[in-house]
Image (cartoon, rainbow, N blue to C red):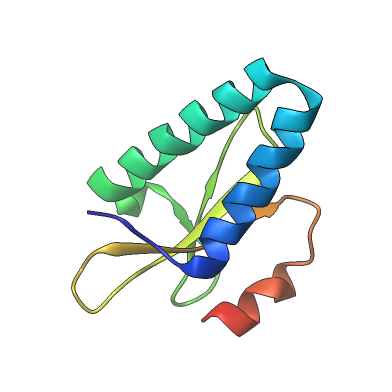
Amino acid sequence: MIEISRAAEADIRSAYQWYLDANTKAAGRFRDRLLNIFGLIEERPALFAWVSPRVRRARLGSYPYDVFFMIGDNDRPRVIAVLHERRDPSALMGRL
């Protein structure tokens, strides 16, 4: 089972709320795409590119967000951030 950090949960709530305020259908599609990516991360984490020695990135495709995750000591993926593509990636440093 995939784990989601509190910081990543806050990222998700913020992005989802932005889409919800703009367009409820887009918010639903964002949620569905995110859940789909979480499933892929859980099933096949090696599909996704390394962005550092410990962190991989999954792109959301039609949405400008990336899911950053690590593989924990228990071999379970742990999502540490869900960030807009234009956000400075150094935001990850405090989450490692």
